[in-house]
Image (cartoon, rainbow, N blue to C red):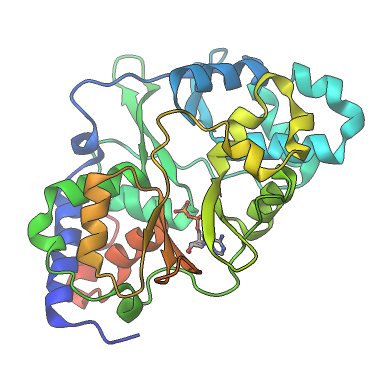
Length: 327
Ligand code: ADP
């Protein structure tokens, strides 16, 4: 890794200042729809609703207590699959589970419940980012209080993807200063990479994601050439209609179930500069970048959290640290 150069530092400071003066509200489009699911809904039905609406997560609502009840994500379905594998004799129960059972499923398989972080939509974006990074959440709900009823209202959900897109689209004057390369700044992970083969079963890949606590596994051939990436959200179409047996099928088959508008995977090389990565983020629907060499051999992986962490925490000067301290 090389030391951070002055121009790069200026770029990063510019981005951090931008994140301090913008709020989560600024990231939201003028008009948007929000699908909230009742906690009483059957988990089976929730899958159909996500697929029909082309979404991969939704806030949950406890209508008995009129309260926000957490965020449903691909991780919940992965937990359900682990439950199914650990207690195959309970398959009939799995069919009857409601979204409100998700916490019991976590307990039964012994995973720690995900911290339910939320952020107020008018707090600085910097705060939403640092909360996400600290809790390792890839998305957090924006929760406001209705002043008349004093009740919580879910305004929307903000993701690392949306925030990085917002940065990439609005701060070209700062991102163009980020001329150090991926190699120079050591961006991403390059050792102990979890990979799988096309012929591995979906269950094996899910297990890798759980063990490594990651949201995607590159699929490589016997020469370590990258063929595809299996993402946590790819699990959703696999278990549609309660087809848990299909999890024993291969990754290759599962990847054919991707939505028609799937845009493909994104790659970069270690000599690519961070400014060019921001150009890719601006132009495409990037959820991670697979780092390859000239011959498509896998070198590493850069997640959105790696990029966001770099932007927020690299070369922070003492005057900046004061600005970021919580009120
Ligand atoms: P995100 O938090 O953006 O969804 P991940 O959970 O996939 O990203 O990644 C978390 C961390 O694990 C990152 O530092 C990333 O570089 C690393 N990582 C991601 N995928 C893999 C993998 N297949 N093998 C090893 N490390 C990975």
